[in-house]
Amino acid sequence: MNELTGKLKEVLASVLPITFIVLILHFTVSPLEANLIYAFLIGSALVIIGLTIFLFGIDQGLEPIGHGVGNTLTQSNRYAVIITVSLILGFFISYAEPDIHILAKQVDSVTSGQFNNTLMVIAVSVGLGTMMTLGMLRILKNIRLKYVFTGAYGLIFILSLFSSFDFLAIAFDASGATTGAITVPFMLALAAGVSSLKKDSKLSEADSFGLVGISSTGAILGVLIVGLFIENGKLNGVLPEADITSTNLLNTYVSKLFRIAWESFLTLLPIIIAYIIFQIFFFKHKKNKVIDIARGLVLTYIGLVVFLLGVNGGFMEVGARLGIQLASLDSSVPVLFVALILGLTTVLAEPAVHVLTHQVEEVTGGSVKRTLVFIFFSIAVGMSIFMSALRILIPGIQLWMYLLPGFGLAVILAYFVPDLFVGMAFDAGGVASGPMTATFSLAFVQGIAEQIPTADVVADGFGMIAIVAMMPVIAVELLGALYQAKLRKASNAAISKERSIGGNHGEEIERLSHRTDVSENDTHPK
Image (cartoon, rainbow, N blue to C red; front, side, top):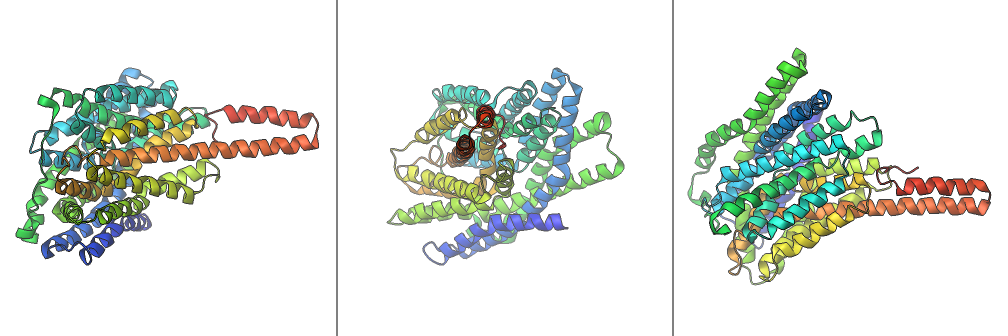
């Protein structure tokens, strides 16, 4: 019960800031129709209930499965088994991710079916499964993260040269959306299960991060490759009209319930089948353990249905409507200000961000405080949504002008910060682009694109999640550089103190300090 209460507090902190922002705007500069605001409030309540149950179910069901699969794969010591199972599991956990289904349906709806939602989900899932497998092999083969990211983003850059701006925006959005509430806990547990079997504890700690970041590049590659085969490579689209204002609220939710329930069951079914197979042949869990995991999977399903019902019932449509109304004002200041506030508040409330900030403070021995991490994260995501709105308002700013130097800088920084921070940084992109970003914030930005005459709803309406996924990478790497600088400063101060005392003891300390300073894998102060 305490754990469930904790999840509820996390979700309330995630959803309530958006609810308050909408209500303030409704009673001031951007009034909404009565039916629309009522639908939003009902949707918000459903999102809170659904996300709480969903996250609680993830902890009880998917995380134990992920950790068990990671241990089982490593103990098999057969690369053919590891590759096959990783490919299959990677595909299915991505296919089960609610955020990618939300994004795919938005793409399908906006483009009037030119880029079908099923095709997009499959392309993203194949790409994620492939790169997740390479990420697992990287852990087993002790390949440095910076080399993997250099190769992955180098390939993405080459494919981008042959892709349209439409697919570039959707592809990078997919990388943020696919690393959501199901994939992140499962992959972190999988990576922890594999890396925990290493004898070197420091390598094990570093390798427990990075798999999410590597896997997310697969989503980009999958969409870009599919885009090469779609005729003309150009997508046209408009934002669909909201029908809530003319529909009975009860009918709005009931009409969507059975479709969402069926689709949610189909997305989780492969994971259930995978667990049954592993239980029969490998896990052989006791009855109580099986019951606990089964209960977790049921709760995950119930929470997913309620969450998606709230999102589709009114939550996202209000986001789009606010974007349209604020963008129609004479001044662009209100829409830019709201975009900044959305980023500053929602990221601080994302449950996974709290987990990551704890990890950063813990692995740095308290040298990098949680408060500092929160400030970096908040500014990074606030600027991300602000930058997304700004590029819609100013036609000359293209998405690649953000992404090319941004991810280029991220890859370069990877060569100058400890490996542990490289893994955490690229994982941070998936952490920051959580449920609120993939739903309300994206709909808000699309509403702006719909209203601005010079904007393209596809090329400009998408791409926000991409920027949100990019900025925290740079932020965490800068934290890594700051941490390394503090270590050097402390080390140099110790050397200077010993030198002032004199003797060979000072020379010995200098020699040992130099050894610890140049070791990128060793992230703890000596």
